[in-house]
Image 1 (cartoon, rainbow, N blue to C red):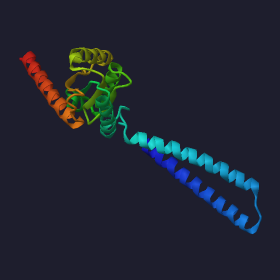
Image 2: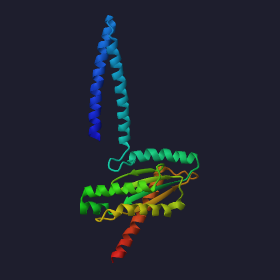
Image 3: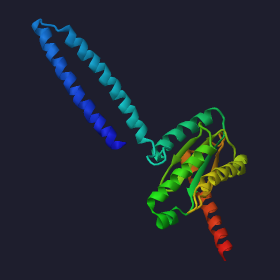
Image 4: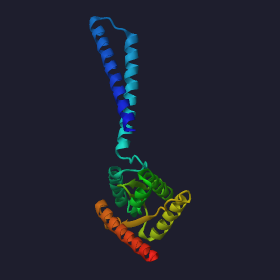
Length: 227
C-alpha cells in the first residue's frame, strides 16, 4: 500500500509539473497577445483533475496513518484520537462507555510453533471476531502486537459478562476452521462514568491492569488443569 501511494504521488507530481509548464506558456502567450483558448481550457481541465486526485490521495494517506495494516482496524494513533473525541461527547451527553483491552493468549507460542505468518492469521481472525462482536459505532483497534482495544459506546459495567460471552462465541466461530491452535482472549475492562469523567489514559491503565489479572487467572487455571 505504501509503495502504491508513493508511486501515485510521484505520478501526480510529474503531472503537476507538466500543468505548471503549460500554464507558464499560456501566460507568456497572454503577455504577447497570442491567447490560445483551447490550450487554456485543456490546462484548466487537467489542473482540476489533478487537484481532485491529489485530494483523494491525501485522504488515503491520512487514513493509512491511523489504520493497522494487518487487521484494518485503527492503530494506536487512530484509537487515541477517536476515543478521546468519543469520550468528550459521552461526557457532554452524560453517556456511559466501556473500554476493553483484549490480549490474544499465547501468540508467542503460535509464532514459535507455526511461524509468524500463522501468527498474523491468528491476529486477523482475532480482529474479525471482535468486529463481529461489536457495533459499527464502537471503536476497535490493534494497539500493539497481540493487544486489541475496544471503546463500546453507551455501555455499562453490568454488561461485562454479556460482552465476554459474545466475544467467546465469536472466537468459537473463528476456531472451527483451525486445528493447529485455539484462539482465546484475556480481557480487561474499565467503565467510563460521565459523572467521574476519568481520562482516556486512566481508563487504559485500569483496563490494562484488569486484563493482566485476567491473564494471570488463565495461567493459574491452565497450570491446575495440566497438573
